[in-house]
Image (tube, rainbow, N blue to C red; front, top):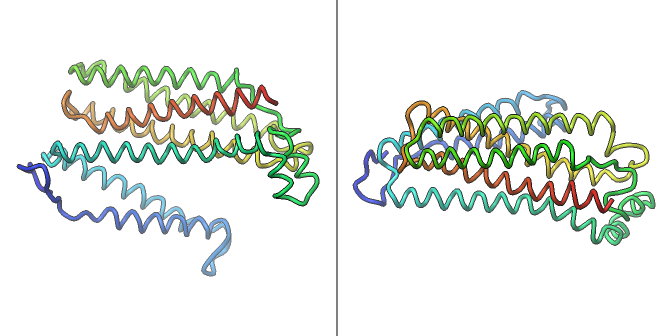
Length: 290
């Protein structure tokens, strides 16, 4: 590390974490293939290779972020470095936006051109018939005005609490910052619990997969990918904020220097906005159209 660099541009000591984390990511995905399909003479269902890769990723994340925190405390995060961190977070969130665009796209694609795509994509009459409507006949939709509405209110409230915490930290009110951040973490955990219950209800009552909707699995797959990956982002964001809470309680962050918390707040607002679009289009618009 540069330890209190006297100039804006400096080079820190080489870090092993990019290489180590890449190796563990590769191991995890190879392990996933082994687990699901079997590979290299190992039987299908062999899960320990995947587990080793996953644990290695967690270890790399911890070590990498620990070093970044040490660099910050050591004075290595000059104004130019901080600007670079901000640009990096902005580009990361932009890439996440495009990720979710793909899942919205399939819903709009099938709603507008489903029958045309079905005639081109399948020679099976039952599949073409199922895809001629979106959502397909036989699919029982989740009511937007029960659990999804509850989760919408939870996320909107969490957006206000994280903003409160951020503002409190900016003015030096650490007590309110801790309280606001704690409430945000609790609300994020509640959202995850409610979504898990919703998924349990969908699977238990066969809302998307039943005899009448036997040829319309595309709807269930795209629904679970869109809402499930958002739920994964909520879980990641909750952990992100929980770490910030622990750091805040440990004396880290000042009114002028708290980008770790600021980045977590940006990420959480991104999660909020994506959910509003998911709720509006996947639950409400396509539910009414059905």
